[in-house]
Figure (tube, rainbow, N blue to C red):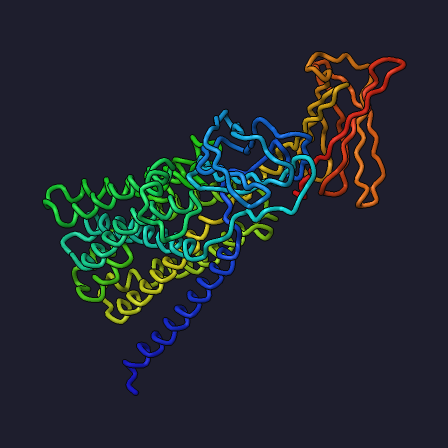
Length: 544
C-alpha cells in the first residue's frame, strides 16, 4: 500500500465511523420522539364538566379552557353506547371554547373529545369523561398515535429544512461568495426542488394531523382547508417564495442573481419566524426576530458547505477566492447563530432540570452534542486547514473537502433532531400549563361557589372562592372555611379558614396540598350565628 493511499483509506474509515454515529443519533431521535404522545404548545387548563364529574342532569353546554387562545378543529361527544355526536355549535372567547349541547344526554358515562389548533400552528387533542346520573362503562375514546403519519411529518420537515438551508443557503453562497465558480449548482438546485416538493406535502400532513386523520385521507379537501387555516400555512408560503427566489437566482438573469439570492436567504428566516414553538413564545418582539436571525445564519453557514467542498474538489484554483470570502465572513455569522440560539434555548427551557426531565430538553441536549462536534470540526477547518488550502496545498485541500463532507452529515443529523421538536412541547409551555389554576363550580339550593386553586398542582398553592346564593345572588357570609380531604390516600380533612381581602372573594394562602389526584373540596359557610351551609365537590389536582 502506497503512502498516498493510506490517508484516503484512513479517511474512509473515519467517515464510516462518523456515519455510524449519525445513524445512532437518528435512532435516538426516533426513540425520543416517536413513542411520545402528540403534544403541542397549548394545554388544557380546565373543562366543564370536569373530567370524572357526575352530573345530576344533562348540561346545556360544555366549556374548555386552554393555556392560550385556540381555534377548534374537531369537537365530538361519544355516548355511553359508543356512538358519536359531532358538536358543531361553539364560540371561542379568548382562551375558552364554549360548546352547545344539541341533545339531552341519557344516563351513563360520556366522553367529550376535542382537537384544537394552537397559536404556533400545532394541533393538540384530548378528551374528558363525565357521567349523567350514574357512571357506566366508559365508551372507547381518545387519541392514538399514528406512527405512519408522524414519520411522514418528520420526513417532510427534514426535507423542508434541507431545501431551505442547503438549497436557499447554497444559492446565496453561489451568488455572493463563489464568484464565477459554479461547482455545486446541481446540488443546490436539487435541494431547492426537494424543498419545493416537501413544502406542500408538509402542509397536507399538517392538515391530517390537525384533524387526526390517517394518511389515506391526504387528498381530501377538508384536510387542505384545515391546513390552510393554521399558522403553518404562512411558513409554507414564505418557504416556497424563498425557494422560488433562490431557484431564480440560479437560472434567471445574471444581473439580478445576487438580489434574488439575498431575498431567498431572508425568506428562510421569515418562513421559520412565521410559526413554531420558538417564534410564538413570549415576548414575540424578541423571539420572532431571533428566530429570523437564527434561521438566516444557519442557511448562510450550512448552505455554503456543499458548494465549497465541491469547488475545492473539482476546481481548487477557482475555489481559493470562495474559501477566502467564506472564512472571512463566517465568524460573525456563527456569533449571531450562537447568540440567538442560546437566548431562544433559555426562553424555551427556563430551568436546567428541564433538559433531562422533558423530551424537548433531551432533544436539545442531543442537538448541543452534535453542535459541539460541528463547532470543533469547523474550528479546526478555520484555524488549521484554511490558510494552507488557500496557499494551494493539495493534500490539505483534500483533507478540507473530507472534513466539509463530515460537517454536512452532522448538519443533516441536526436537522433531523430539530424536526423532532415538532412532536414535543417546550418546557416553557409545560410550565405555563402547570401554573394554571384548577377550578370547580359548586351549586346547591342553599349556596353556590366558584373555587379556584392556583397553581393547580400538588405543592404550595392559594385558593380563591366566590360565594353566592343558590339563585346567583350575593351572599354576605360571616366566615368561610375550606376543607380538603382525600380518603382513598388516608388523608384526613385539612381545614383552613379563609380571609376576605376586600375584592369580593375569599382566599386561603400558603396552602399545602401534598398529593396529586382527586380531592374532596368542601366549603363550610357561616351564613349567620345560627346557620352553617356546607357545600362540596371533587376537584382534580395535577401532579405538575
